[in-house]
Length: 342
Ligand SMILES: [Zn+2]
Image (cartoon, rainbow, N blue to C red; front, side, top):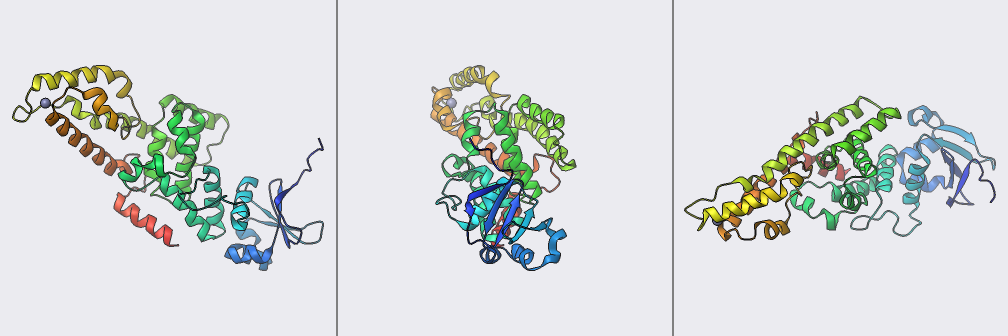
């Protein structure tokens, strides 16, 4: 096999009639300055104004064919994803929801779309994030069906994998970095679903590899540790209906209903109360699986209490992780609407 050139021309983004070469790490892209300028005010400025270098962290040169060469600060992957989205040459590469998209592409477009002011693509990235990190409990409950980013299925498939925690952490970090506070509560919730061993192993590795980049990272680590404990407390609250008394004026046989609860608690005690997923710990099927034999009135009361506690937890979510920029969901919704209007 032929040895790869040190700098790789990206085949689908190397146009023979291109007028400018962009370089990010080892990848090179020969593009059309007119098209890139039309899509991005910032690139327009870079391509027209030679004095803008320091503002955008670029380095200029001349490519071997004599056309301008602009070296970007971004990673090769980010630049590749971004230029593919700008040129829209691969069918379905970055369509709006409900089309699926990879987490990496969403984050690349978020980073580059924000920096280079390509607002239409940035909004699309935010729309995908919103399907995964929504603003209402109803949407959160439906995210298995409506979420468009790939991280979801992996979280569901395996709670124990550090790599999937790493992804959740990356989203939380991006939410901080790009001032998307409406993503943060659910992104942190997702991080805190993992076992403490997984969370701590990830942090230890980050320290070993010296990739804790800033105080903000440390603050995020602390938020997740605080959150992981609060999730266990919240699980107890959400399952409070299992220790409720059956009201004698409503329940036909309080002793029998109490016994059903006792057996249920006995069965789920060890596996459930250390759970980091209070919103998902008790699902629709559990009513039949665990509380079969309880009278219909007690089931109804329990169901209402469970629903109330879940909703109360959802309303508390933005305040659970000791974040400095906490707001209630109503304010976060306004923030989201503003982001989507840019
Ligand atoms: Zn009863």
